[in-house]
Length: 247
Length: 247
Image (cartoon, rainbow over all chains, first blue to last red; front, side):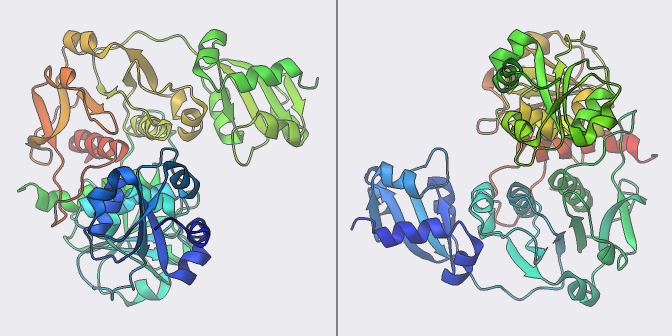
Protein backbone atom coordinates (compact mmCIF):
# COMPACT_ATOMS: atom_id res chain seq x y z
CA UNK A 1 0.00 0.00 0.00
CA UNK A 2 1.69 3.24 -1.08
CA UNK A 3 1.40 6.54 0.77
CA UNK A 4 -1.54 8.75 -0.25
CA UNK A 5 -1.60 12.49 -0.84
CA UNK A 6 -3.95 12.84 2.11
CA UNK A 7 -1.52 11.03 4.38
CA UNK A 8 1.33 13.33 3.30
CA UNK A 9 -0.89 16.32 4.00
CA UNK A 10 -1.88 14.93 7.41
CA UNK A 11 1.72 14.25 8.46
CA UNK A 12 3.01 17.69 7.52
CA UNK A 13 -0.01 19.34 9.20
CA UNK A 14 1.00 17.63 12.48
CA UNK A 15 3.99 19.97 12.73
CA UNK A 16 1.42 22.44 14.05
CA UNK A 17 -0.08 22.00 17.49
CA UNK A 18 -3.65 22.84 16.43
CA UNK A 19 -3.68 19.88 14.02
CA UNK A 20 -2.10 17.55 16.59
CA UNK A 21 -4.89 18.47 18.99
CA UNK A 22 -7.58 18.15 16.30
CA UNK A 23 -6.34 14.76 15.06
CA UNK A 24 -5.11 13.45 18.42
CA UNK A 25 -1.91 12.36 16.71
CA UNK A 26 1.80 13.08 16.79
CA UNK A 27 4.81 12.08 14.71
CA UNK A 28 7.89 10.11 15.79
CA UNK A 29 10.79 9.44 13.44
CA UNK A 30 13.78 7.18 13.07
CA UNK A 31 14.31 3.57 14.07
CA UNK A 32 15.38 4.21 17.66
CA UNK A 33 12.65 6.67 18.61
CA UNK A 34 9.87 4.82 16.75
CA UNK A 35 10.87 1.52 18.39
CA UNK A 36 10.67 3.14 21.83
CA UNK A 37 7.08 4.17 21.12
CA UNK A 38 6.17 0.79 19.58
CA UNK A 39 7.40 -0.88 22.79
CA UNK A 40 5.39 1.47 25.01
CA UNK A 41 1.74 1.83 25.98
CA UNK A 42 1.29 4.54 23.39
CA UNK A 43 -0.93 3.42 20.53
CA UNK A 44 0.26 3.31 16.93
CA UNK A 45 -1.99 4.75 14.24
CA UNK A 46 0.10 4.27 11.07
CA UNK A 47 3.68 3.24 10.40
CA UNK A 48 5.56 4.32 7.27
CA UNK A 49 8.67 2.34 6.31
CA UNK A 50 11.16 2.24 3.46
CA UNK A 51 11.37 -1.20 1.85
CA UNK A 52 14.78 -1.93 3.37
CA UNK A 53 13.30 -2.26 6.87
CA UNK A 54 9.82 -3.61 6.01
CA UNK A 55 10.90 -7.04 7.31
CA UNK A 56 11.76 -5.60 10.73
CA UNK A 57 8.23 -4.21 11.06
CA UNK A 58 6.23 -7.10 9.59
CA UNK A 59 4.04 -7.28 12.72
CA UNK A 60 2.64 -3.86 11.83
CA UNK A 61 0.56 -2.94 8.79
CA UNK A 62 3.32 -0.79 7.29
CA UNK A 63 2.75 1.73 4.56
CA UNK A 64 5.67 1.31 2.17
CA UNK A 65 7.39 4.54 1.18
CA UNK A 66 10.42 5.49 -0.91
CA UNK A 67 13.41 7.36 0.52
CA UNK A 68 12.25 10.40 -1.47
CA UNK A 69 8.75 10.26 0.00
CA UNK A 70 10.28 9.93 3.47
CA UNK A 71 12.37 13.03 2.85
CA UNK A 72 9.19 14.88 1.94
CA UNK A 73 7.35 14.04 5.16
CA UNK A 74 10.36 14.10 7.50
CA UNK A 75 11.54 17.08 9.54
CA UNK A 76 14.96 15.48 10.10
CA UNK A 77 18.08 16.45 8.16
CA UNK A 78 18.86 12.77 7.74
CA UNK A 79 15.57 10.85 7.72
CA UNK A 80 16.03 7.38 9.18
CA UNK A 81 13.98 4.63 7.46
CA UNK A 82 10.75 4.89 9.43
CA UNK A 83 8.12 7.38 10.59
CA UNK A 84 5.18 6.62 12.85
CA UNK A 85 1.91 8.36 13.61
CA UNK A 86 0.98 7.73 17.23
CA UNK A 87 -2.12 8.57 19.25
CA UNK A 88 -1.71 11.25 21.88
CA UNK A 89 -2.58 9.43 25.13
CA UNK A 90 -5.25 10.83 27.43
CA UNK A 91 -3.85 12.66 30.46
CA UNK A 92 -3.47 10.47 33.53
CA UNK A 93 -4.68 11.73 36.88
CA UNK A 94 -1.99 13.34 38.95
CA UNK A 95 -0.40 11.65 41.97
CA UNK A 96 0.28 13.90 44.92
CA UNK A 97 3.52 12.16 45.85
CA UNK A 98 6.97 11.50 44.50
CA UNK A 99 9.56 13.97 43.25
CA UNK A 100 8.12 16.25 40.55
CA UNK A 101 9.25 18.99 38.22
CA UNK A 102 6.96 21.92 37.36
CA UNK A 103 7.79 24.07 34.32
CA UNK A 104 6.63 27.67 34.13
CA UNK A 105 6.53 28.82 30.48
CA UNK A 106 9.41 26.89 28.90
CA UNK A 107 9.57 27.92 25.23
CA UNK A 108 12.45 25.99 23.73
CA UNK A 109 11.64 22.47 22.45
CA UNK A 110 15.24 21.35 23.06
CA UNK A 111 15.05 22.43 26.70
CA UNK A 112 11.75 20.58 27.23
CA UNK A 113 13.17 17.46 25.54
CA UNK A 114 16.29 17.54 27.71
CA UNK A 115 14.21 18.02 30.87
CA UNK A 116 11.94 15.06 29.98
CA UNK A 117 15.10 12.94 29.54
CA UNK A 118 16.38 14.16 32.91
CA UNK A 119 13.07 13.27 34.59
CA UNK A 120 13.35 9.78 33.15
CA UNK A 121 16.95 9.39 34.36
CA UNK A 122 16.18 10.64 37.85
CA UNK A 123 12.97 8.64 38.25
CA UNK A 124 10.62 11.63 38.12
CA UNK A 125 7.36 10.17 36.83
CA UNK A 126 5.38 13.36 36.39
CA UNK A 127 6.36 16.58 34.69
CA UNK A 128 3.81 19.38 35.21
CA UNK A 129 3.84 22.20 32.65
CA UNK A 130 2.10 25.56 32.54
CA UNK A 131 -0.38 25.71 29.68
CA UNK A 132 1.88 28.07 27.73
CA UNK A 133 4.88 25.74 27.88
CA UNK A 134 5.88 24.28 24.50
CA UNK A 135 3.86 21.18 23.55
CA UNK A 136 5.58 17.89 24.41
CA UNK A 137 4.26 16.35 21.16
CA UNK A 138 6.08 19.01 19.13
CA UNK A 139 8.25 16.96 16.74
CA UNK A 140 11.49 18.53 17.97
CA UNK A 141 10.60 17.62 21.55
CA UNK A 142 9.60 14.06 20.61
CA UNK A 143 12.90 13.53 18.76
CA UNK A 144 15.10 15.01 21.47
CA UNK A 145 13.58 12.94 24.29
CA UNK A 146 15.02 9.74 22.79
CA UNK A 147 12.03 7.74 23.96
CA UNK A 148 11.85 9.17 27.49
CA UNK A 149 8.43 10.55 26.61
CA UNK A 150 7.11 6.98 26.80
CA UNK A 151 8.12 6.78 30.49
CA UNK A 152 7.42 10.28 31.85
CA UNK A 153 3.86 11.59 32.17
CA UNK A 154 3.71 15.21 30.96
CA UNK A 155 0.68 17.22 32.07
CA UNK A 156 -0.42 20.76 31.18
CA UNK A 157 -2.26 22.53 33.98
CA UNK A 158 -3.02 25.94 35.47
CA UNK A 159 -0.05 26.27 37.78
CA UNK A 160 -1.55 28.63 40.36
CA UNK A 161 -4.43 26.35 41.53
CA UNK A 162 -2.17 23.30 41.16
CA UNK A 163 0.45 24.79 43.47
CA UNK A 164 -2.16 26.10 45.90
CA UNK A 165 -3.66 22.61 46.17
CA UNK A 166 -0.56 20.49 46.62
CA UNK A 167 0.43 19.13 50.03
CA UNK A 168 4.05 18.67 48.89
CA UNK A 169 6.93 21.03 49.70
CA UNK A 170 7.57 23.32 46.74
CA UNK A 171 11.01 24.72 45.80
CA UNK A 172 12.28 27.35 43.41
CA UNK A 173 15.82 28.49 42.64
CA UNK A 174 16.68 32.02 43.64
CA UNK A 175 19.93 33.92 44.03
CA UNK A 176 18.88 34.74 47.60
CA UNK A 177 17.94 31.19 48.58
CA UNK A 178 19.52 28.56 50.81
CA UNK A 179 22.76 27.00 49.48
CA UNK A 180 21.52 23.81 47.82
CA UNK A 181 24.65 21.93 48.97
CA UNK A 182 23.90 22.69 52.62
CA UNK A 183 20.12 22.22 52.47
CA UNK A 184 18.40 19.10 53.72
CA UNK A 185 16.22 18.09 50.82
CA UNK A 186 13.23 15.75 51.09
CA UNK A 187 12.91 12.60 49.00
CA UNK A 188 9.65 13.92 47.58
CA UNK A 189 8.72 17.44 46.60
CA UNK A 190 8.10 19.81 43.74
CA UNK A 191 10.84 21.75 41.93
CA UNK A 192 9.66 24.72 39.82
CA UNK A 193 11.82 25.82 36.89
CA UNK A 194 11.06 29.09 35.12
CA UNK A 195 11.10 30.62 31.66
CA UNK A 196 14.42 30.86 29.77
CA UNK A 197 14.48 34.67 29.82
CA UNK A 198 12.33 35.68 32.79
CA UNK A 199 12.57 32.82 35.29
CA UNK A 200 9.60 31.89 37.47
CA UNK A 201 6.75 34.38 37.21
CA UNK A 202 6.29 36.73 40.15
CA UNK A 203 2.75 35.51 40.77
CA UNK A 204 4.09 32.02 41.42
CA UNK A 205 7.15 33.20 43.34
CA UNK A 206 4.85 34.74 45.92
CA UNK A 207 3.36 31.32 46.69
CA UNK A 208 6.72 29.69 47.43
CA UNK A 209 8.69 29.89 50.66
CA UNK A 210 11.47 27.40 49.93
CA UNK A 211 14.23 28.96 47.87
CA UNK A 212 17.44 27.24 46.82
CA UNK A 213 20.64 28.70 45.38
CA UNK A 214 23.13 26.81 43.22
CA UNK A 215 26.49 28.33 44.24
CA UNK A 216 28.50 30.06 41.56
CA UNK A 217 32.28 29.55 41.48
CA UNK A 218 33.58 31.84 38.74
CA UNK A 219 35.75 34.58 40.28
CA UNK A 220 34.21 37.35 38.27
CA UNK A 221 30.71 36.33 39.27
CA UNK A 222 29.65 37.55 35.88
CA UNK A 223 27.94 34.44 34.54
CA UNK A 224 24.38 35.55 34.38
CA UNK A 225 22.62 32.25 34.78
CA UNK A 226 22.66 28.59 34.02
CA UNK A 227 20.60 27.30 31.13
CA UNK A 228 17.27 26.02 32.53
CA UNK A 229 17.97 22.40 31.51
CA UNK A 230 21.40 22.33 33.19
CA UNK A 231 19.96 23.96 36.32
CA UNK A 232 17.26 21.25 36.37
CA UNK A 233 20.00 18.60 36.05
CA UNK A 234 21.86 19.99 39.06
CA UNK A 235 18.73 20.28 41.22
CA UNK A 236 17.46 16.77 40.42
CA UNK A 237 20.95 15.48 41.17
CA UNK A 238 20.87 17.25 44.54
CA UNK A 239 17.42 15.89 45.46
CA UNK A 240 18.45 12.35 44.53
CA UNK A 241 22.00 12.16 45.85
CA UNK A 242 20.99 11.56 49.47
CA UNK A 243 19.25 8.32 48.51
CA UNK A 244 21.56 7.62 45.57
CA UNK A 245 24.72 6.98 47.57
CA UNK A 246 23.56 3.41 48.09
CA UNK A 247 23.02 2.59 44.44
CA UNK B 1 30.41 55.41 6.91
CA UNK B 2 28.06 52.84 5.35
CA UNK B 3 28.76 49.12 5.09
CA UNK B 4 30.66 48.02 1.95
CA UNK B 5 30.03 45.01 -0.26
CA UNK B 6 33.38 43.61 0.78
CA UNK B 7 32.44 43.85 4.44
CA UNK B 8 29.18 41.99 3.82
CA UNK B 9 31.12 39.30 1.96
CA UNK B 10 33.68 39.06 4.78
CA UNK B 11 31.04 38.74 7.49
CA UNK B 12 29.08 36.00 5.75
CA UNK B 13 32.32 34.14 4.93
CA UNK B 14 33.08 33.98 8.67
CA UNK B 15 30.27 31.46 9.09
CA UNK B 16 32.87 28.99 7.81
CA UNK B 17 35.78 27.95 9.98
CA UNK B 18 38.39 28.15 7.22
CA UNK B 19 37.67 31.86 6.72
CA UNK B 20 37.68 32.51 10.48
CA UNK B 21 41.12 30.93 10.64
CA UNK B 22 42.34 32.79 7.55
CA UNK B 23 41.08 36.18 8.73
CA UNK B 24 41.64 35.63 12.44
CA UNK B 25 38.15 36.99 13.08
CA UNK B 26 34.82 35.86 14.46
CA UNK B 27 31.32 37.34 14.67
CA UNK B 28 29.31 38.19 17.78
CA UNK B 29 25.75 39.53 17.60
CA UNK B 30 23.18 41.31 19.68
CA UNK B 31 23.57 43.95 22.37
CA UNK B 32 24.15 41.59 25.29
CA UNK B 33 26.72 39.33 23.66
CA UNK B 34 28.55 42.16 21.86
CA UNK B 35 28.79 44.16 25.10
CA UNK B 36 30.32 41.17 26.89
CA UNK B 37 33.07 41.04 24.27
CA UNK B 38 33.57 44.83 24.26
CA UNK B 39 34.10 44.65 28.03
CA UNK B 40 36.62 41.80 27.74
CA UNK B 41 40.27 41.50 26.70
CA UNK B 42 39.17 40.36 23.25
CA UNK B 43 40.01 42.94 20.59
CA UNK B 44 37.35 44.57 18.42
CA UNK B 45 37.98 44.83 14.69
CA UNK B 46 34.77 46.47 13.44
CA UNK B 47 31.40 47.23 14.98
CA UNK B 48 28.21 47.52 12.93
CA UNK B 49 25.24 49.32 14.51
CA UNK B 50 21.78 50.41 13.47
CA UNK B 51 21.24 54.17 13.96
CA UNK B 52 18.97 53.66 16.96
CA UNK B 53 21.91 52.53 19.13
CA UNK B 54 24.75 54.55 17.55
CA UNK B 55 24.76 56.79 20.62
CA UNK B 56 25.36 53.83 22.95
CA UNK B 57 28.49 52.92 21.00
CA UNK B 58 29.92 56.38 20.34
CA UNK B 59 33.28 55.35 21.83
CA UNK B 60 33.75 52.94 18.94
CA UNK B 61 34.14 53.80 15.26
CA UNK B 62 30.78 52.29 14.34
CA UNK B 63 29.78 51.38 10.82
CA UNK B 64 26.18 52.49 10.49
CA UNK B 65 23.83 49.92 8.99
CA UNK B 66 20.12 49.69 8.29
CA UNK B 67 17.88 47.01 9.84
CA UNK B 68 17.69 45.43 6.39
CA UNK B 69 21.46 45.28 6.03
CA UNK B 70 21.71 43.78 9.51
CA UNK B 71 19.23 41.08 8.50
CA UNK B 72 21.45 40.26 5.53
CA UNK B 73 24.60 39.74 7.59
CA UNK B 74 22.98 38.25 10.68
CA UNK B 75 22.50 34.54 11.37
CA UNK B 76 19.90 35.26 14.05
CA UNK B 77 16.16 34.91 13.53
CA UNK B 78 15.69 38.25 15.26
CA UNK B 79 18.80 40.36 14.67
CA UNK B 80 19.43 42.67 17.60
CA UNK B 81 20.78 46.13 16.67
CA UNK B 82 24.50 45.39 16.62
CA UNK B 83 27.08 42.99 15.17
CA UNK B 84 30.79 42.96 15.94
CA UNK B 85 33.83 41.47 14.26
CA UNK B 86 36.34 40.46 16.91
CA UNK B 87 39.90 39.16 16.68
CA UNK B 88 40.41 35.53 17.64
CA UNK B 89 42.84 35.75 20.57
CA UNK B 90 46.08 33.74 20.48
CA UNK B 91 45.99 30.57 22.57
CA UNK B 92 47.27 31.02 26.09
CA UNK B 93 49.70 28.49 27.53
CA UNK B 94 48.04 25.80 29.56
CA UNK B 95 48.18 25.69 33.36
CA UNK B 96 48.62 22.26 34.88
CA UNK B 97 46.38 22.96 37.83
CA UNK B 98 42.78 23.77 38.63
CA UNK B 99 39.66 21.87 37.70
CA UNK B 100 39.45 21.29 33.95
CA UNK B 101 37.09 19.83 31.40
CA UNK B 102 38.39 17.94 28.36
CA UNK B 103 36.06 17.36 25.39
CA UNK B 104 36.60 14.41 23.06
CA UNK B 105 34.93 15.11 19.70
CA UNK B 106 31.89 17.19 20.67
CA UNK B 107 29.99 17.97 17.45
CA UNK B 108 26.99 20.02 18.49
CA UNK B 109 27.54 23.81 18.79
CA UNK B 110 24.73 24.07 21.36
CA UNK B 111 26.41 21.47 23.57
CA UNK B 112 29.78 23.23 23.37
CA UNK B 113 28.14 26.58 24.15
CA UNK B 114 26.32 25.13 27.17
CA UNK B 115 29.53 23.50 28.44
CA UNK B 116 31.48 26.79 28.12
CA UNK B 117 28.73 28.48 30.18
CA UNK B 118 28.95 25.68 32.77
CA UNK B 119 32.75 26.08 32.99
CA UNK B 120 32.26 29.79 33.63
CA UNK B 121 29.66 29.13 36.35
CA UNK B 122 31.76 26.51 38.10
CA UNK B 123 35.03 28.46 37.89
CA UNK B 124 36.69 26.17 35.35
CA UNK B 125 39.18 28.44 33.59
CA UNK B 126 40.36 26.09 30.88
CA UNK B 127 38.36 23.93 28.52
CA UNK B 128 40.54 21.54 26.50
CA UNK B 129 39.03 20.25 23.23
CA UNK B 130 40.14 17.55 20.81
CA UNK B 131 41.07 19.04 17.45
CA UNK B 132 37.91 17.60 15.87
CA UNK B 133 35.58 19.22 18.40
CA UNK B 134 33.36 21.96 16.94
CA UNK B 135 35.08 25.37 16.76
CA UNK B 136 34.32 27.65 19.70
CA UNK B 137 34.20 30.66 17.35
CA UNK B 138 31.38 29.06 15.38
CA UNK B 139 28.63 31.69 15.47
CA UNK B 140 26.12 29.34 17.12
CA UNK B 141 28.61 28.61 19.89
CA UNK B 142 29.47 32.28 20.38
CA UNK B 143 25.79 33.20 20.68
CA UNK B 144 24.87 30.38 23.05
CA UNK B 145 27.73 31.09 25.49
CA UNK B 146 26.14 34.42 26.48
CA UNK B 147 29.56 35.99 26.97
CA UNK B 148 31.13 33.12 28.92
CA UNK B 149 33.62 32.72 26.07
CA UNK B 150 35.27 35.93 27.30
CA UNK B 151 36.05 34.28 30.65
CA UNK B 152 36.87 30.65 29.76
CA UNK B 153 40.02 29.77 27.80
CA UNK B 154 39.20 27.18 25.12
CA UNK B 155 42.16 25.27 23.68
CA UNK B 156 42.32 22.71 20.86
CA UNK B 157 45.01 20.06 21.38
CA UNK B 158 45.94 16.47 20.58
CA UNK B 159 44.31 14.76 23.54
CA UNK B 160 46.53 11.66 23.75
CA UNK B 161 49.86 13.47 24.41
CA UNK B 162 48.05 16.05 26.56
CA UNK B 163 46.58 13.36 28.80
CA UNK B 164 49.83 11.39 28.90
CA UNK B 165 51.70 14.52 30.05
CA UNK B 166 49.37 15.80 32.75
CA UNK B 167 50.16 15.29 36.43
CA UNK B 168 46.50 15.80 37.39
CA UNK B 169 44.05 13.00 38.20
CA UNK B 170 41.87 12.28 35.16
CA UNK B 171 38.25 11.08 35.32
CA UNK B 172 35.75 9.71 32.83
CA UNK B 173 32.14 8.67 33.28
CA UNK B 174 31.41 5.00 32.80
CA UNK B 175 28.47 2.77 33.68
CA UNK B 176 30.90 0.50 35.58
CA UNK B 177 32.59 3.29 37.54
CA UNK B 178 32.49 4.37 41.17
CA UNK B 179 29.22 5.97 42.33
CA UNK B 180 29.93 9.69 41.98
CA UNK B 181 27.88 10.44 45.13
CA UNK B 182 30.09 8.16 47.25
CA UNK B 183 33.43 9.08 45.65
CA UNK B 184 35.89 11.46 47.31
CA UNK B 185 36.63 13.95 44.58
CA UNK B 186 39.69 16.24 44.53
CA UNK B 187 39.41 20.00 44.25
CA UNK B 188 41.50 19.89 41.09
CA UNK B 189 41.49 17.38 38.29
CA UNK B 190 40.47 16.68 34.72
CA UNK B 191 37.02 15.49 33.65
CA UNK B 192 36.79 14.01 30.14
CA UNK B 193 33.44 14.15 28.35
CA UNK B 194 32.94 12.18 25.15
CA UNK B 195 31.20 12.43 21.80
CA UNK B 196 27.39 12.71 21.70
CA UNK B 197 26.90 9.34 20.00
CA UNK B 198 30.01 7.33 20.85
CA UNK B 199 31.26 8.65 24.19
CA UNK B 200 34.96 8.82 24.99
CA UNK B 201 37.10 7.09 22.34
CA UNK B 202 38.55 3.70 23.31
CA UNK B 203 42.11 4.93 22.79
CA UNK B 204 41.61 7.53 25.50
CA UNK B 205 39.60 5.25 27.77
CA UNK B 206 42.63 2.96 28.00
CA UNK B 207 44.66 5.79 29.53
CA UNK B 208 42.22 6.47 32.34
CA UNK B 209 41.90 4.57 35.60
CA UNK B 210 39.38 6.76 37.43
CA UNK B 211 35.84 6.00 36.37
CA UNK B 212 32.70 7.62 37.80
CA UNK B 213 29.04 6.63 37.44
CA UNK B 214 26.10 9.00 37.78
CA UNK B 215 23.39 6.79 39.35
CA UNK B 216 20.20 6.28 37.37
CA UNK B 217 16.88 6.32 39.23
CA UNK B 218 14.24 5.44 36.66
CA UNK B 219 12.68 2.08 37.56
CA UNK B 220 12.80 0.75 34.04
CA UNK B 221 16.50 1.58 33.73
CA UNK B 222 15.78 2.20 30.09
CA UNK B 223 17.06 5.76 29.73
CA UNK B 224 20.01 5.30 27.48
CA UNK B 225 22.12 8.21 28.55
CA UNK B 226 22.20 11.76 29.70
CA UNK B 227 22.91 14.48 27.17
CA UNK B 228 26.63 15.35 27.35
CA UNK B 229 25.97 18.90 28.57
CA UNK B 230 23.67 17.77 31.41
CA UNK B 231 26.17 15.07 32.41
CA UNK B 232 28.89 17.74 32.50
CA UNK B 233 26.64 19.89 34.71
CA UNK B 234 26.16 17.05 37.20
CA UNK B 235 29.87 16.17 37.33
CA UNK B 236 31.05 19.78 37.78
CA UNK B 237 28.44 20.16 40.51
CA UNK B 238 29.80 17.04 42.25
CA UNK B 239 33.42 18.22 42.03
CA UNK B 240 32.52 21.64 43.43
CA UNK B 241 29.99 20.76 46.08
CA UNK B 242 32.58 19.73 48.71
CA UNK B 243 34.06 23.23 48.70
CA UNK B 244 30.79 24.94 47.82
CA UNK B 245 28.95 24.20 51.06
CA UNK B 246 30.61 27.22 52.60
CA UNK B 247 29.58 29.70 49.94
